[in-house]
Image (cartoon, rainbow, N blue to C red; front, side):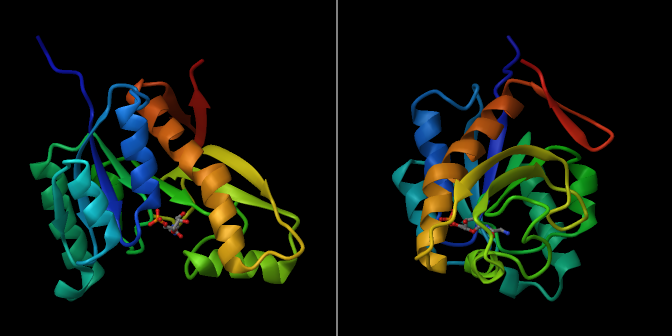
Length: 212
Ligand code: GAR
């Protein structure tokens, strides 16, 4: 019988709390039958690699610093995705830019979680804590998180899910980051992966439709 299980590769660069949310969702049977088969980090020594190890998931490091440019790095990543027979690639706190060869090889098969309500506070330079610093500097009263398909436009691909989070008067970038993760990212990322693995996402004219 054919095996319809989707192979999920998770890309990380740091602490890996979003990876942990995916691992926990998988353990609860909430990834729509998808299976995390490999974790790839752009940096050695990060805690996300420990999380993969603790969950018994194969992990490898393809360090950005070992490659001269984005093209060479992207080519190495593409080789890895093919070797792992990836069906879905999830950028979960992945802080490195990949070039358009990857988006073309995996159209609407790569997703990213961004810690703001796109199109606010996104694009080049908006990553990690910088996003929350910018939100506080602007004084927005609501922020949140977005899961979207990855295209060649940084943070510009079709939006799959979003969740809003209130900004508090006394928030610091750190407290806001924590709340956005807890209330939004750790929920909508596994949910988007589940919808993908259940073949419920389609993209028409850059708009994502979710089959009920
Ligand atoms: C998360 O907030 C994620 O949304 C963000 O970095 C953090 C990683 O945390 N990603 C980006 O800013 C990508 N542009 P984690 O390693 O604990 O999942």
